[in-house]
Image 1 (cartoon, one colour):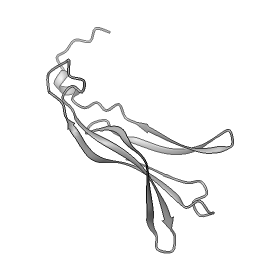
Image 2 (cartoon, rainbow, N blue to C red):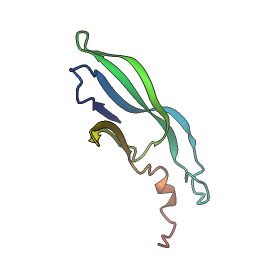
Image 3 (cartoon, one colour):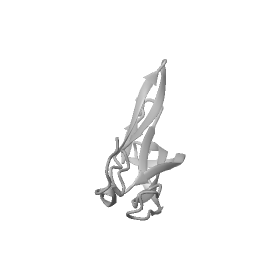
Image 4 (cartoon, rainbow, N blue to C red):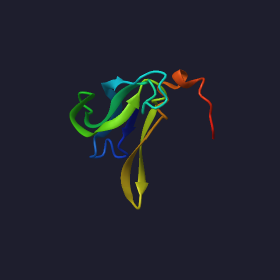
Length: 112
């Protein structure tokens, strides 16, 4: 799903950030336009910070930063990035449009 390395990974900030699907959250009702999720399969995404141990080349000490982000079985690509804002590093996460179930609505008109 997504991975970011702290900019000072080998200089005292040994953090690796991962985002991944971890829990099935349910399925919708196919073909019912009023259903809030339009028949898709939905999951929950988790973002976890690990400590990188260079001698063992392993990730240890997981800390869950967020575990309530929506996920889907379709269009679920995500990206983690670390970027400075005002001189301080921030972790950003972007996610796909979660197009779950769009094929169940192929015959519905678009009134845009």
